[in-house]
Length: 240
Image (cartoon, rainbow, N blue to C red):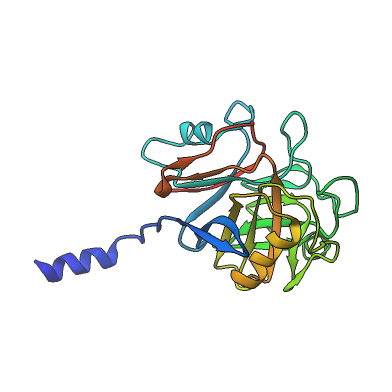
């Protein structure tokens, strides 16, 4: 019986592994990090329901999933206008809602270089916007935000170590092979330099992208946590 059980298990499709979330500390700052393996987990972006209405909350994302599917992890994933539509490029299941904006402009989004979080072919990558424009990767899902936190292992050139502009912040960094994406939310106010150093020096990720601040929210089922508050625009999450 044991041999047959092993053979049956080998023939069954691989079951997606649950995303893991855990606390971390660096230089006196507190963070929650969630690690996703895109080649093993169903990583997606969410914006609208079937009627075209903005979802806006983690509970709304969970409610529109088919019966039997759950949302173990989710996070706000990019800046948005007053109507919660994406500020920059947004692609969901190959449908593009907004175009790429690689040029400098007002606010954090326009603090170039900015970048794109691209999910494709069992991998996920943070790609600087000009490089994204030149490479034109075929992303199943993509969300643009800014500024980049880490670009090819270097911190964004405009970040100041002694900056007094501190907020709760969240973002994502990816490994060079695209097999690991680590989502981070600070649990206390940090400046950009502190936040970027955490991605580069502690997580050792060569590319990292800022998603947002002030409204940063996290849903982590294994921690029994689902942050409430302001309505969100794009949301990134793992479906099981």
